Amino acid sequence: MTEATETESPAIKAHGAESPETGPRRAESPRTGSRRAESYEAVVIGGGTAGLSAALVLGRARRRTLVVDAGEPRNAPAAHMQGYLSRDGMPPAEFLATGREEIARYGVRLVRDRAVDVTRGADFAVALASGRTVRARRLVVATGLRDELPAVPRLAERFGRDVLHCPYCHGWEVRDRAFGVLATGPLGVHQALIVTQWSRDVRFFLHEVAEDELSDDDLRRLAAAGVEVVPGAVAGLVVEDDRLTGVRLADGTVHDREVLFTAPRAVPRTALLQRLGAELRETPFGAYPVVDATGLTTVPGVWAAGNAVGFAEQVVNAASGGYRAGAAVNGELLMADLDAAVQV
Picture 1 (cartoon, rainbow, N blue to C red):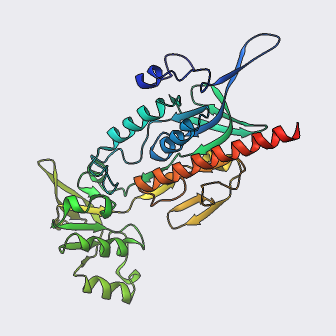
Picture 2: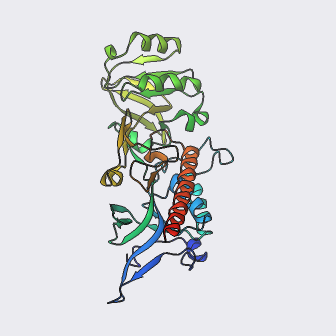
Picture 3: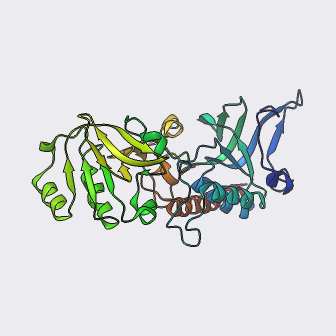
């Protein structure tokens, strides 16, 4: 990777990420003296909450660790994150910046780059978009997922503001306002029912869902919760003075609404795991890797954490998953080294 494309935070440089104890090893060619791929004990792919949490544990365990961060956190549209004890209301960007500073204290290196391929031999070779290759004895994949929003005009531009997807993340902040829920599939009814915990004024826009697709139980529950069912396709949102004021149907009818909830289509970023042959499981929110309690995938030496293992992993869950993965990686490396030493 050239100097022009590699980005490291000042904190990482200030804390000596290239120290002899924790910095990367570079193999020298006996004939040419040229540098081969950098070698680490662990490479963490993804610099969000799960990845940084795993890196923090590994750094504190004195493992040579690299974090590859493409800089695309899922919660970037949100101004604040909620529900994380002691961090409630903290801006996601500030949270991640703090995490990057913390891992730097323990010699963990972070590069702004994208992992585009990975192969497995005696160790793992991770190819980066910059053209550089790094090697690792163990991998933690924390690449998360991408949200695909319904193709409704003006919806994407309001996402994270007054177009929301998670009432546990944002419900308190918008409580008692006029809610709309845009159906995107069979789970829309569940979302419409859940948000009534935060507002008694809820309208459920069926959009592309036909009324006869709702079961009798669905209709009874919606009625019991006081949710008004609105048939017909949604043509767009009404935005005035930089705030949502209504939902416009295809027939021109406008429903006054202040907040719109909708469930994006989750697109798991599993390309690297598939490249390694990891087993995936199908869920209503996409295909995710099969993992054990520590995040170990079906590929030996490869862990996954955060939204890389499921749609509903909140920030606090991602931090916990990354911690477990980091501790498991350290433990396995220790046992592997001890077993090798016994056999000598």
